[in-house]
Length: 100
Image 1: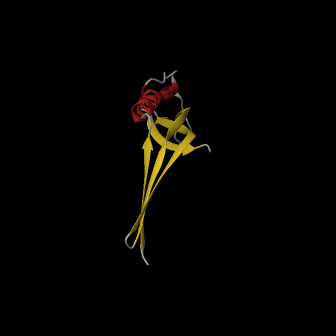
Image 2 (image 1 turned 45 degrees about the horizontal axis):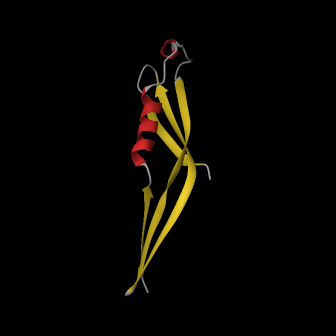
Image 3 (image 1 turned 60 degrees about the horizontal axis):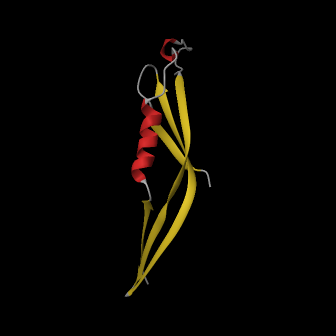
């Protein structure tokens, strides 16, 4: 029998998390980095990272035939957000990962 599953992550404070990442990307001071010479075909990168606690819940819905199940699983985890900037540009969020 076919089973459908839908999983949604709901964050407790998504606005605060968004602000943290936007600040990471926008307020880092350039200390002359864009004037550094690097060997041909290399790219100079500046990296900025921050760690943040994230709380929320996983909302899991499963349906098998006429049976519907619902689970709400709270979580607290730590994420590492990393932004990278190339020569004289803006920082871009390149990756984030859960540290748990």
